[in-house]
Image (cartoon, rainbow, N blue to C red):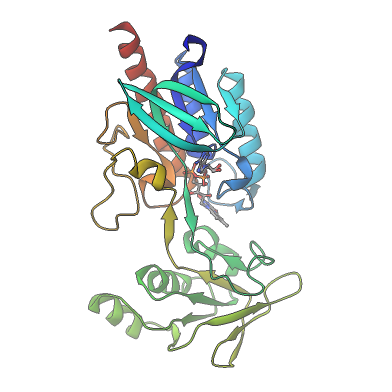
Length: 303
Ligand SMILES: Cc1cc2nc3c(=O)[nH]c(=O)nc-3n(C[C@H](O)[C@H](O)[C@H](O)COP(=O)(O)OP(=O)(O)OC[C@H]3O[C@@H](n4cnc5c(N)ncnc54)[C@H](O)[C@@H]3O)c2cc1C
């Protein structure tokens, strides 16, 4: 048991988890990180808005470098998923997909979120080649071009309005808008071309997006399509622990400024802890969670 007792266990090896590992391990805590880099939101992305990288950098490369850096601080990284968490006697027990059990004084949840997909023909093939799930991340790539946004809720509408500052033409494809009156007014006053009562049937393109076929038979010639259907967190594991979620959307784990949840010794960082879903925020929260968890573990070990 003793050799499997860690100070800080981290579920998720995206930027939040890796930064947490770096800071916790640099405080000499015994740290273990679980997760598969290819499942990080970052893995297939090219990042142009992260501080200190003026030219777009591959997300895969950032993750590889981050892991090496965490390991250089002696954090252990295991490419395994956690399938169950228990919280007993002030310790967290984690069960991995291969059946191993590890115990830790503290736990950081940084499992990210899964962006909801359209699940239409052409979408998977063209991700990163005109299909995007993040206006804030990718708007800049569409300067002077024609783009479409698909979605019924506020994320789609604000995304479409934001894109007007970059793109030449912005279409908003929706079945039925479910937004506030204020946002509706804003949309009406804007140049966004709203196409209602239909949905995307297929995204067409060989190497990049060329057009979008709608269910009403219309074809829109666009260079990009933004899928803005919201995000869903990897929340089941956390829910079983009795963690509180944010009251507004019930989609993210609620934390305070120390990244503490309502459960002692349990922290959350990155996308799973709320908007904006951006690397800079994930890294910042990971740093805070790593430091806090290492300090908590030290106090617990000495008590
Ligand atoms: C296409 C795309 C483009 C993007 N572009 C940008 C951009 O330009 N700029 C920007 O700032 N952000 C961008 N983002 C967002 C950015 O990738 C995320 O904000 C960031 O990766 C969040 O980091 P995270 O550590 O919270 O989660 P993630 O990076 O998603 O990592 C979560 C990790 O948790 C692991 N995990 C989940 N469940 C388990 C489990 N049960 N057991 C073990 N491990 C588990 C996953 O395998 C994954 O490795 C983009 C995202 C996408 C999808």
